[in-house]
Length: 252
Image (cartoon, rainbow, N blue to C red; front, top):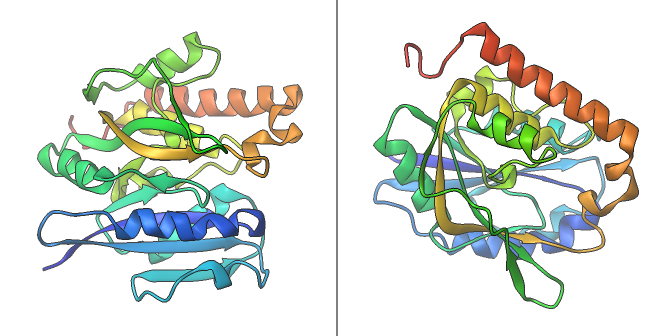
């Protein structure tokens, strides 16, 4: 029986021109025997501009919906995520070679690991790359460690939420991505860390494109009042989950 890893991508028209690069990075992935991928693309809105950038491939599922932000688009895309693991990939980013195989290996090897992350390289407009320099060591990330680091380092986690791969059942149990105008992926990362152990791969898993049109480069993203509100609700959710005593898997 074929097993699947589902790549979920939210996209809006300004980022659609990068979908070809995203697809190339997916199609070049090599997976363990018996595994395959599906790419679930959800447009955040109802334009006619996105679908033309997607190639013909039976492994791609494309839908549109009313605009509500990347978190809502990804979460509604879970209705089509018919695989064991769900990998996030932003429309303007690219997977590094071997990324999916490493995610599958880490999650398949240890049932107490609920999610994985990996090293990220920023991809600059001139084609050069820049690393983070403060990556943790290869291996498990214990419950609560991400929140502790995030709080102590000016709301910056030691691992990047854009590299997440999550067990589908755990992702659904947490309600998908947070309903926030930004930082919805950080909110998910902290929630995952509150209830489950994770894994970090020191191998580069993602090329994070830096370009003028990306959402995180817009002025609204750094508005102090909104940022404070986002960070407050992200932290409160993680702490509430910790206090509830709920763990994944049960009894861990």
